[in-house]
Image 1 (tube, protein in one colour):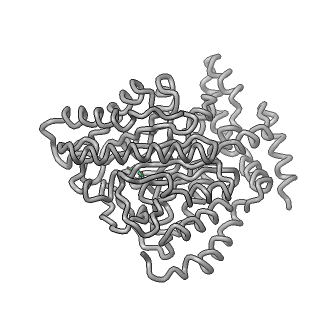
Image 2 (cartoon, protein in one colour; image 1 turned 180 degrees about the vertical axis):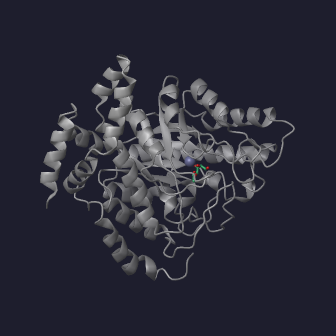
Image 3 (cartoon, rainbow, N blue to C red; image 1 turned 90 degrees about the horizontal axis):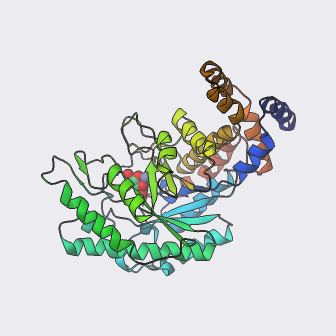
Length: 422
Ligand code: RNT
Ligand code: ZN
């Protein structure tokens, strides 16, 4: 237990820069992340008739031990949560419904099909549940169009699905006493050059208005919409582009979801946060890591993740920004993937909370850009690791370097016994 001493040194070092590290840890403790359930089973879900995942989503890797059913998935999430400091949320997709062996069409899903999830979330004292209608992996999405489909019957099916999902979201909000963010992402788009970019967007706007027609209590359900630049099979045109959803969210009072992998490879979402928050009340972040494209690699403590965290902290907008994770890697231990990604985001937030904001803004106002750059560089080698370890101990989770042993034990005792995958 060398940590308290190390922490004392770190506290002094930060105090010398005018930073209260105890306060930083207290703030970090109050930030819930929304862990995405789909990392645990490669976005398969539990529907009986499983379609190709489609929608331009691709999960690669064949690491053994994926969860095969809801109980296994919950067990894996419990394991992951036990290795992540703080109190967090779980983000579900409609395909994770538990229908007791019955086939329930997506437009007929009800809160009761998720009651085991909400009971489990209460029992494990989760901060809340978030939700997503699933507009992919379905025969009626096989041609790549859903809410903007030319066929009004197909559109209506997906509209009903969206409506059903908002009610499920509201039931989560009610049952858990914390608003559920229900996020709409659709895959609609063309592989090759369209002749008409306008009409599908008009149809999408109309369909979304139908999805959101019912007024729900914002204390129970918060609607979000997620844009994308391109997908596999929708390289030339995506109906729900950034401009489309930015306009939609502003005009309809919806939350905007920014996924870190949904822009040009060098275009970060960090810079968008302060701009967009002038016009929308709430943001949902999908923290992800694209490698050369929207590949959804496991999140690491990258420059961009650190910039995202800084922007949320600097803007004092932790209340208005919901931080979700969105990645899926089947080439490494899936529970470890959650732990690595979540701990990386929390560390980035801690580093942002430990920033000498006062000194930096003062330098900036005085035109001392040399000093500003020097101080920003200095922050890279400050002892944030000691503060992190201190927080992990306080939160009763293993420190860095200590949790992989638990993963190996769990893999051996639980995951490796899941012989036949799916
Ligand atoms: C797809 C979007 C979307 C999905 C999840 C599974 O490009 O990022 O958020 O990853 O809904
Ligand atoms: Zn996303």
